[in-house]
Length: 325
Ligand code: 5RP
Image (cartoon, rainbow, N blue to C red; front, side):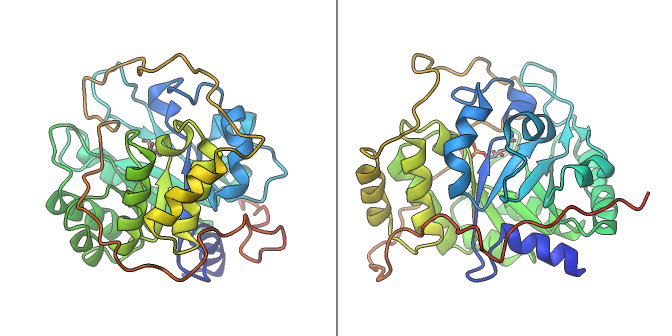
């Protein structure tokens, strides 16, 4: 593996503990103005310093993320479908590798749709993306998107994750499930877990804890952070598990304590409680979490939260790289 690729990966999965906290805000690429993400700039501003990396589309990166940031960008490069369209699995690669380089992407992300109508295209596209990205030393994150007709069980997710890894993905994003350890065991590259549909804060923290305990490097969480009533408190609580080895109880306590801290980010659309559209096709917004009742009886001795990274953190994003064509 190239030095540059390893270096970019280490900005996303921290070398010191092999853990990752990715903040996902790419939902608009097929959902449009997702509930509580209508104004990405306002959502990102208070949360950015608490994540290790940001999963983002190029449009939002250019318009809503300060270019002075040292947080690595995981750039979504697939798209082409919408929540009201015929088939969410009909995606293609929409961002050129040159533009990804211009955006100083630390990784490229795309979805694959194993078992769906456009499975073939998405898997071939993943292989091609890895070809292009490797030329520039940029890692690829494959998102295992699950159609609503497919079960989010360990058998299916193992299949999808393994296929992604076999195509050369450097990280695979998938869902937490019963027997999650089996998914991790059969996937030769790091697995990061999506947060899924909004659930209670306690359950989202439990998901985070269980995913890591099951072998995930961390979470790529969106809705369960920015759809929380207290997004900053929530991301800090999630962080306390990912980087501080907190138990669920410790993290939840932290979440409750931090609610009173000012300034606290509140939803910019307090009255909107329903999603605007319902999917008629593979549904990436369905509940992804099934609790398998964590074993949290073992208390952790460590403090519950790590502070946001100091600016001198050696695992900071890369300097811009130059395209050679
Ligand atoms: C959208 C995505 C999201 O980034 C992913 O689902 C994580 O976000 P959430 O925690 O809200 O599920 O890939 O297609």
